[in-house]
Amino acid sequence: MKTITLTHKLSDLGAFLRGTDADEIIARTTYIPGGWHEAEFEAHRAGFQISRFLNEEYLRNHTFAECYRLIRR
Image 1 (cartoon, rainbow, N blue to C red):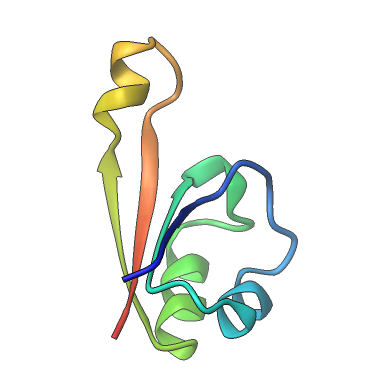
Image 2: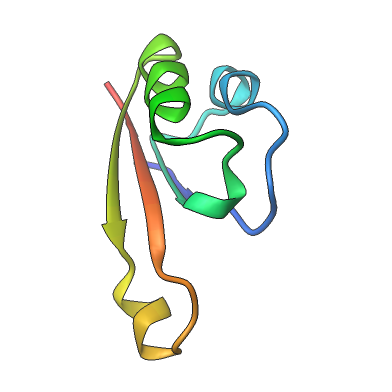
């Protein structure tokens, strides 16, 4: 299972998901364009499940911690 963590903002989530070979993607919510419903729609359309969570590592570092986890179905 290939996991990647995004370190930059995306301009098009759907295109990124369709073009990646990763099975799991972790990204801060601020790196994904639009809101929750847009991200959920694009994820499902590209064959991914999406969930929102607080990243413990970012919490320990006192940085913005809200992230999305996208897992290929």
